[in-house]
Length: 131
Image 1 (cartoon, rainbow, N blue to C red):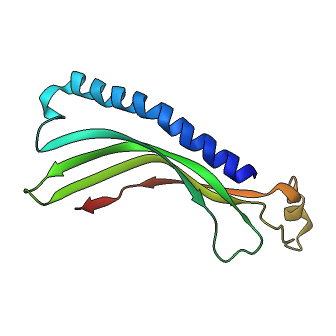
Image 2 (tube, one colour):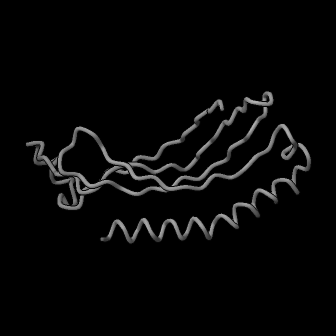
């Protein structure tokens, strides 16, 4: 139930942010003029969520993350477009990872709360799509 509620709130927040993202894209056009908004080329902002988990580790729970970045749409011909993206903030990972003691007391004592362990992975995503 908690995951469904979080997903529902995320969808609502994305609806609220869509208006702001359009306004920010319009701000880019005002700042840089026709160079960022023409028939063949334009910039836009990207905002989204993701749900990730780690493979190979048993009994973990997935983790929601957010991503934010820029994307461009470049018209190559009437049928082909190149869409490079740059997502500077893209959080992934897992939570509730089972703690496995190493057998080294000095190292095991560094683990603060073994029941609440999680792994946060921060990526910079740079996908390039040809449509």
